Image (cartoon, rainbow, N blue to C red):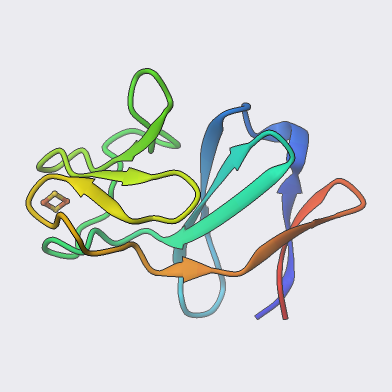
Length: 108
Ligand code: FES
């Protein structure tokens, strides 16, 4: 699993963007904070639903945390650790990504 997903500047800062991959894990999203990128499988540790109701809406209104739209769980941007909600203490599954020449890229 490797490849460029998008340009870093295509993601708001802070912001997030969802992607459907051709291979597992199929549904992921990337969070940007400054020059840092953090990616997770788009599956809430509560009951496994996707986190967003609307495309690319993965963050709280103030963009300080990741939000699960189903039951309101909140997760840290940079670790995916759940800080509040029904899956408090659990974490999103990370996907290794980096920025290469301005492209958000999945690590091989
Ligand atoms: S499915 Fe995410 S909080 Fe319930």
